[in-house]
Image 1 (cartoon, rainbow, N blue to C red):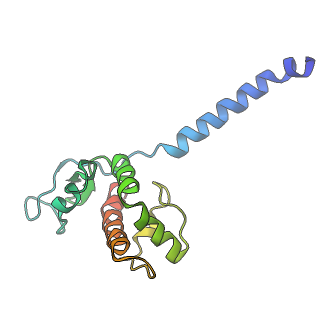
Image 2 (image 1 turned 180 degrees about the vertical axis):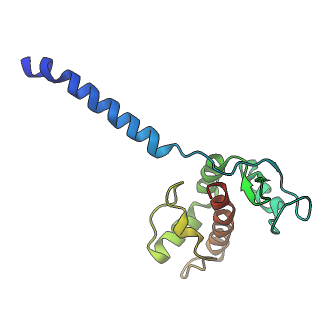
Image 3 (image 1 turned 135 degrees about the horizontal axis):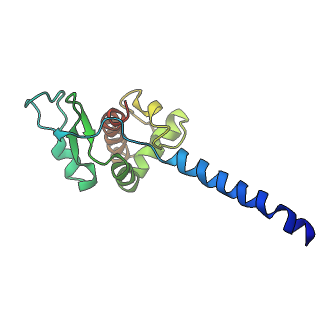
Length: 144
């Protein structure tokens, strides 16, 4: 009991440190927030992103443009959660095919390396993998 009374402050300090580490490793500020609507061919918007394709799946995939005209998700965290919910099999197929780590806000970069064509999966899962590749192309703009 005496040991417990002596060391409770150290245990509390360790708990606070773990909590702070958890907060700082999971919170990621968006570097390029949406500052305008993304409309192909208007203003300074660059690229040919089919925003309707994303919105047809979920409103969480709402796309805007940053100050440079690049397509970004208006709420990247919400978009990533929706991607996992709707396209989990496509993400998993990519991970399995090329031995990737799970897709997170910190590990998305390897997923930007190309339009994935997983083998040994159904056509539906291939379509999901293509959607994931398109998603990551826009998602990465939010943090560059």
